[in-house]
Length: 175
Image 1: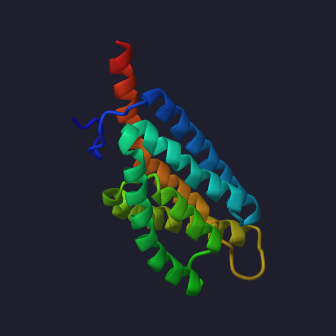
Image 2: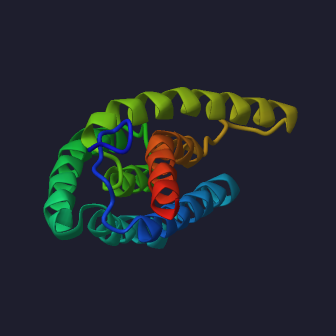
């Protein structure tokens, strides 16, 4: 029986999932802050986000967690091809690519189009804000865009239905 709009099954360990989603949100916010502050997304944050996906999928799928994670990793490898092309064309930074691939382990593949569209739209807003800030500050050269902020915002937006479904699951278990 699906418990989210994404059609995910009833979680095996909803409390653990809630804790991991909260930790994911914290790690994402740290990545966005680092990108805003220094235009860098720390490798350790991307690695932590990717590593945290392992217990997340086990908490969701129980014994099927490894298979689910392997499917997500295979899809993420497919996503790596166009992301690396964007990096090679200097349209996306290396940290942005690593962050997107780490987050791809969390997001079901049929939600990736939403992730990409939301990232592009939010990235446009971030770019506009960076351009305005650049102009107001009367800085020289081209403005630098912290695209990780858009990536994080889009990923958290995509994960909202999962969090809502988890909240419903926890409430029904408690009541």
